[in-house]
Image: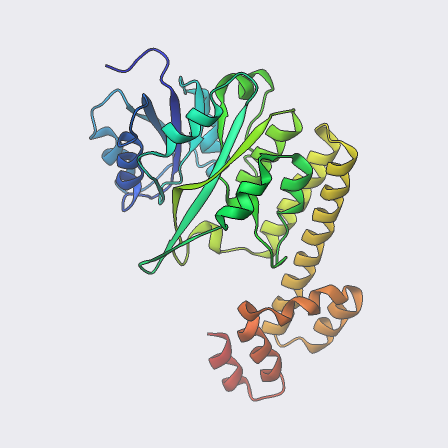
Length: 323
């Protein structure tokens, strides 16, 4: 029988996740030494996601069916509103958590002074696993400040990025401070949720061991970023700076991040013009924002560099490059 107040409520936002949602749910139910519940917010899926969740027939697994598609942030808000646990955790519908994760994190964090805790992640891609961050790097942090968190959430920065962290946060802290996901963001909503939490004064400790298994798959929402997504992130970051309390160090970091996002937007605009074979517009992009061209040095854009060369070749060759 589920206690009136479980130790933790894990939130799963699911959209057409029939192929993976059971794995996420099972990983929550397999947590050792803690009382858990898992709340799945079905974001208007058209597959068997809702049926799979209902099939558990357990009070530990609850389904929240949304009447309209709200995106990952809106779905998580609905599930959090239904949560009963003392702590709130997030598991993506295509990910899973390791059995000892919750017990280990709450052993560290379940003291009055701590409001949130984060840990390392294991990235699983094409059958191979690796740590997202070096254990020693996270161990040196001890706790996570807002300024440090913002400064380590830059696109194309080439250093370890903290935006993938999946915190456990006290439910009472979330509710007392009115913290919610931005339901207008399709990418970057996890970053902004934790930034909002830290800005409200949450003391967040860092546990360097890995307990979250992140499945990296081509085509997932976090792997598909376009100009509209980046522009939405810029708007959200500007709103965050105007609305939430930040100290001088965090404000400076946030301004750097906004500049970084603006450079990313310029880069994506340049990429679009390259793909369209618009030489004049591409040149204008570089003149307006030279940083956009600098990003073309990244290995992940090697195909785009080939596309630039293809601007001077017959169109059939360009189509082969861009496919």
